[in-house]
Amino acid sequence: MTLSSTVALFSAMTILAAIPSVSVLTVVTRSASLGFLHGLLTSLGIVVGDVVFIIIAIWGLAFIVATMGGFFVLIKYLGGAYLIWLGIQLSQAQSKPTGTETIADASLISSFLAGLFITLGDQKAVLFYLGFFPAFLDLPKISPLDTAIVITIAILAVGGVKVTYAYMADRTRRLMKHPWINHPFSQFLNTIAGIVMIVVGLFLILRP
Image (cartoon, rainbow, N blue to C red):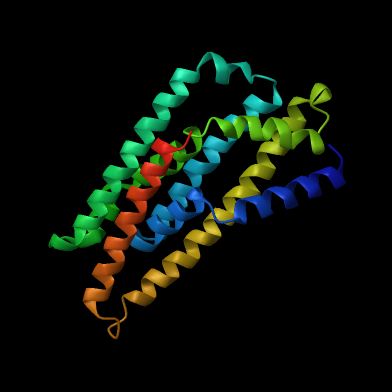
């Protein structure tokens, strides 16, 4: 990879990652409702899923998607059901004395899995990368070093954007904790966040 292609790929992936999407919505929801660490782990899950698909796309293993089509469909349904369950738990947290902070301490892994399932549940992502990368890479001649560079770019670009979203959502959450923000309004936001997670889960299950 040349310096110009590296910069161009980084810029393109940053812009694409910043576009509002299901993954962005999930990162914002987890961070706004449970804290920055949850948003960070959701972002990590998304990045890990992207890295898996990037490796598949770069090394010409698209046939895995066809061969393991049933496996990807299973991941999609399991991931959607998991997100719906998280949404229900979050929306009901307002009625529990422990509140969302206890949930935040107990479900860090759930935030990572939410991000991972959203990415792995979309088998079209690998096809997107297969069409996207040829504009920046000579795939037949790509080396392991080039692959490492692309993965690093994805981590910095996609991860950086998602973590920025998580940080901004967390700052908003902290603002909501000020004394002049009434408690019923905070509970309302909690319920909305839960509904958003349920909708994301349904979207993951129902989309073709």
